Image (tube, rainbow, N blue to C red; front, side, top):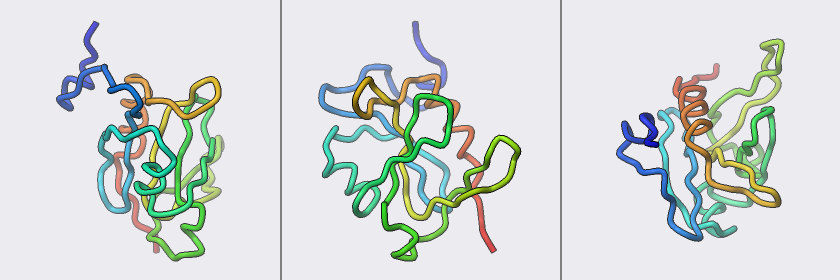
Length: 127
């Protein structure tokens, strides 16, 4: 069965072996889908340094960000909110939304790809 969201992006559901399909969220840009090698080096290259994975949502997703983003003064990107709608953190620099496998990061499944694409679609500015 075809996924209309992936079709709208010109993507198939298949992901090359040894690769991850991730959602890239850059400061002041709308998110986009990218297929990257499933390696530590590729993840570090995407976020520009050492990685940290955070799990702010109940879904099986991880946000891969630069571990030193705030210390390095990377641009403010997107805010994270608690269940009550209160902001509790801001991610600095580019981050990736990935799926979670049994023991490791995994490609983002189509339904979660669409959900988080919409979630992070609005560009946020901080003053």
